[in-house]
Amino acid sequence: MKIAVQLHPQHATYNQIREAAIAAEEMGADVIYNWDHFYPLYGEPDGEHFEAWTMLASWAEVTNRVEIGCLVTCNTYRNPNLLADMARTVDHISDGRLVLGIGSGWFERDYHEYGYEFGTAGGRLNRLGEALPVIEDRLGKLNPAPTRKIPLLIGGGGEKKTLQYVARHADIWHFWWGEEWKRKSGILDDWCAKVGREPSEITRSVGVDRDQVEDFDALFADLAAVDIDEVTLGVGGPEYDLSGIQQFIDWRDSL
Image 1: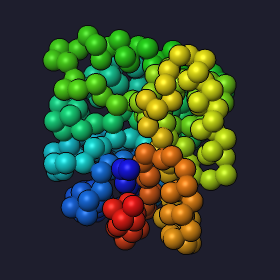
Image 2: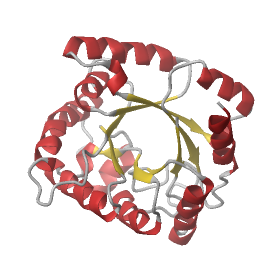
Image 3: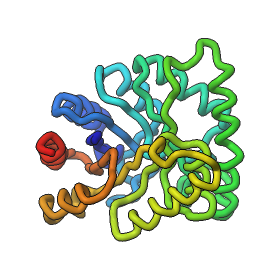
């Protein structure tokens, strides 16, 4: 089981974010994620915030072992051919440690402030479905090629479109931990059967927020009872308290 941390890139200086990434790697985390937004998602709405992909290029240089990625990239913020090229470049900078996380997008302020068309949830999902083959095609044409098959992570739990996209394209499926996770996982299995793919080929990743964890022992017991391949703990700045990551690592290593 991989233990990942999502460092929320808000309400902190970049030095604080970078130091948190370095500390998470030294602590033994397997993956470090940020998120792809332009404004804070909680707290002061106009607080400090940094862009995701330029940050990943920095993380690729200051870390040595951990995988890195966005949890998740908003598909409609970038041309899919360009996104593939960006991913290939960060893949090379990191010596093959990038995870390409992607989703359809949802934070309306990002769209309005940066001049993107917000549209509808269904329309954004359709655009994601159109972009995924383009990304895959461009990754196959780039020179030099990626250092490996870059793992594609799709985040979300939409039962008609998102989980179908996961079954057709993804190496990793990410969804938040809770009562719905098991049911959504079963629906993903059904989509895999429909498209002719083995469910075991898709890594199951769950996310939890540090501020929402009241009883780690109870959470660990629940997670151990299901087939999960990766657990991601979200941590906010500017302090970036990583103590929960150490608890997850110790628990994983005790299994």
